Length: 416
Image (cartoon, rainbow, N blue to C red):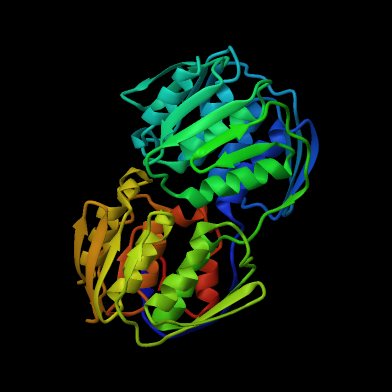
């Protein structure tokens, strides 16, 4: 695929939130009765969650832009479940599998097999589950039931470990306390989990980094998935470096941490305008900024592109947990920008970018990572020459309409 630079303009709608969609699929499946999920993200990752919950007995029907879920009475048949490339499904499903005596083996593709699972495995083992893995990575074998009523877990690797324990605890008969040790990475995702658990009838008490979930059950709830700020960041940054872009379908009051993209854009002196349900960004003279991405790691690749287009030296930091995503996103973001002539240096927890000089077209390696692919695409809108990448549809993981919407904005591209 070739991407050509040029001015863009127009309006697109943000895709549904991937994190909300995963959690809605799990919670509606765990609730005893029928729930309707409106406007879910139907992508490779979320469909993996649907298939996983069907394997535990949920009846999930896809109808146009909604899911009808008949949940409750879940049970494990044992055996293997392939979750593809979905790290979220892997982590959330592990907690659920620990509630049943049958042994569930959770596996996926070669990329998923690099994802760390040690802290979650240790926590489930501490509560009485029997777990095994390949050096702390998938495939993982899990059987329960859980007997412990209190568990501690390190918070610095993945918030999904914490969400997994919280979701599973909502189905236990006894109260469970989850204590997070150290700094909690990506705290907003845990807040989303707790908010959604409450919508589905759970009682959760929060005391700093300690969470107590009362034993009981989930109840059905009709849920509408909001737009995804993580995905909206790509067209918004595209507007900042190449034109004028408006994104609709956004809820500025949602708990998504990645809504911080609007403040980040402002910190780079971007021209940002917001209204009820939308945001608009126009091209302007960008200036360097320092950005703490500890709570918003998914923004790292596209913010690094923003920094490369800003005058001065930017520092992106506090994101060491990025090394355990679909790719080592610190290394792959740095490599992507270097291939386009940017002056960028990787650090242990982020990167330093000296921006302000024109990028040049180059060959971008996606490393099979949807956010690297989309960030490289956006970077290609403001270069000398053109950009090439060999893409296998990575964007479909989180943003199935990405290429279609980029075309709607006026991006010129060619496919081999």
